[in-house]
Length: 368
Picture 1 (tube, rainbow, N blue to C red):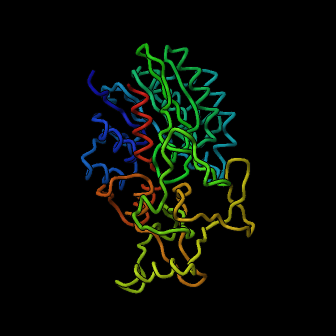
Picture 2 (cartoon, one colour; picture 1 turned 30 degrees about the vertical axis):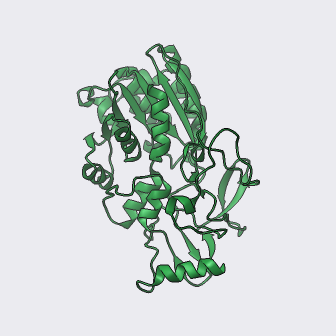
């Protein structure tokens, strides 16, 4: 059986890297100019820019066997303002009333009438693509907050003849050097049972880091991924852009700065401070205006989620930041991936991406 051809909505580059690794032809739909430029530089196909355009003009949609979609997560994320979380009930009502079956501009109009903003409304578009194009395989990804939507989408897909598996995956359990959690849906209508990937690595237990799941490999640490060889020093969160810029080079004061940085790490004088405080809420972390202790881990542990927030090493006076290459490594990108654009857009591309190693595990399980 030949590898499926993928249509990748909200493409970015993470899924595309995974498709290439699996020998799949991938056609992306992407609106960000810098991400399109990165895709071009990497030899990826971008067929059109706006996801709504394909629903309004089906002739734009290329033939495909696999639909991939990672709708924008900012309004659903616990790190965002929460418009998407507040609108979850409205999204679920749209799905329950079969609004996804509407054609042309009708679906978009229905979402607007339901009070959804343009970004939040995009969450229902992948189901409309499946209903109208009928691909054999489906893979959807979002932040854990969206799990109820994926469960509702799964119910519809079963009505349409698909087998479905839905759950929240931990990225570190699939070899990504960070503790990123994502709600994933996979579905197929080829007579086989859809299944999520089986973990190959242990879950990271923050309260008991020495605990490892049996029968699998240990999680990958940040020091391993970056080949820094550091031991028991606090680390930074990968950042992916703010109005101030994004992931900055980790060099200050000239060519000897990296050596200086290593000496500061060795003596323990450098401490991690994030750009916002966090407080635990169940199994999530939520931004807060309170001055609470920042999250800290040794470099010998996985990174926390690569996000769109700026972060740094600091001793209270000096600041040292990750390079884009280091940030991309913690997202499991290949070392030579040709990101395009200025510092902020590149950081955004990295922080918003599906980690390619996780995407590869999902697609392999979803299509074989």
